[in-house]
Amino acid sequence: MLPGAGVQAGSVTVPACSQGSPALSVVTTDSLVAGIAPGNVVPMNGKLRKVRERKGLTQVALCKRAKLTQGYLSLLESGEKKAPSIAVMKRLAKALGVPVAELL
Image 1: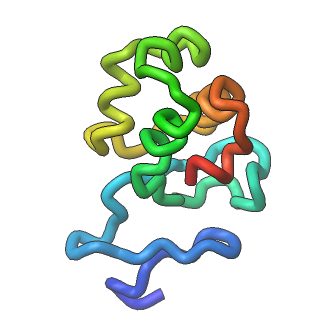
Image 2: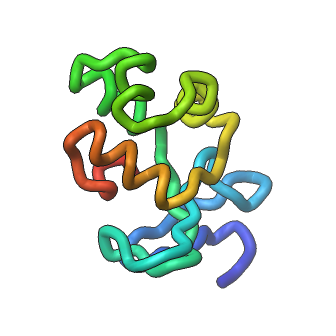
């Protein structure tokens, strides 16, 4: 793929930013999840916070359900943590009652 053209991830194309990487991404490393091949990078696009708020959960409540620290969740939602593991994504999706694909 040409530089700046984006990353092809299964059926999802991730546009490249000026540095060639998405602002927030998930790297899948185990079995196929939501049709995304292992090792591909997929952006979260701020959906985690939107889903959490739509479900009426605070960060503290979601952290208890997903067994994460509030600091880590805050980093994910702000984009400072760029590549959560697929295990973390699965725990978040389960705690929110949504498929992993909804967080991507």
